[in-house]
Image (cartoon, rainbow, N blue to C red):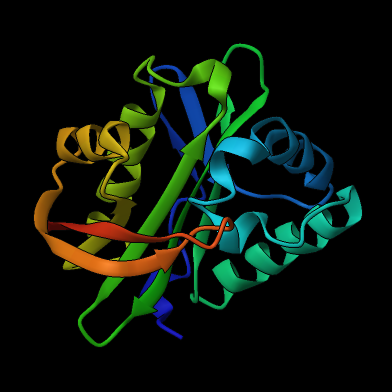
Length: 186
């Protein structure tokens, strides 16, 4: 445990959204977000979506993410629209290696809020949080080679393409796909 990180911000505010650490009893809101977007995200965030088929499982997941935050293992943020207060997205810094330090990021946004600049705002703040507060030197992102929207978003947030990983990820359908590796550095 790194004592310097005991007082990191748990709420990041952008112009149109709030990204914050999950709280107890938000499993229902996370379940609704997943359920409304399951068909379009299960290949992208299979580790998040896999096996979360009930509100109770989502609540357990949220509590595990809260504990992982306190243990400095992962930093999972729920993204909430600042006008409707509706859960509209998810961002997580994970696979943290404190020796470098570096992390990976994964994210998704509700279909009704995509292509409106909200995730650009949020991801920019998350990257700023990673570099300024967590003292990360590097944040990486993997995206399907055909996910052009995620690639554009990553580039807007300062990520640069570092390479392609051939046959790196298996979709739920069983298809092996190529993945692009992008990274942002301090």
